[in-house]
Length: 85
Image (cartoon, rainbow, N blue to C red; front, side, top):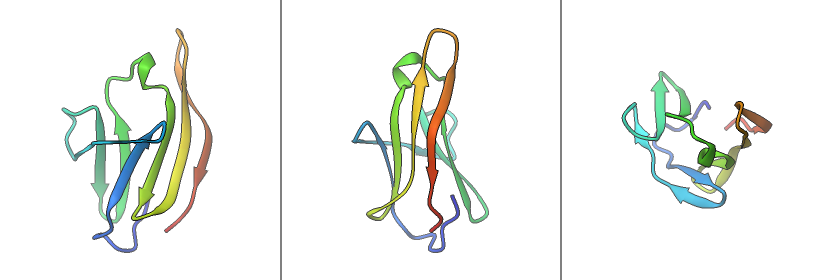
């Protein structure tokens, strides 16, 4: 994700519920990392219960949404949708 305005508020949702995330902190479950003007969300220590639909909103605009499917063998992303801000 590349933000034009670094002061924009970023929200993370899982299955429609707002979830908290850390900033540049690998010790939390959900983390937002900044590298210059780019931002990356990570989910640390993936478990089966992490499956669901994730959305990222900047202010009130949907920027990214994806479904994380889980089964006993692996985890994978499907239905990715990106929108540049």
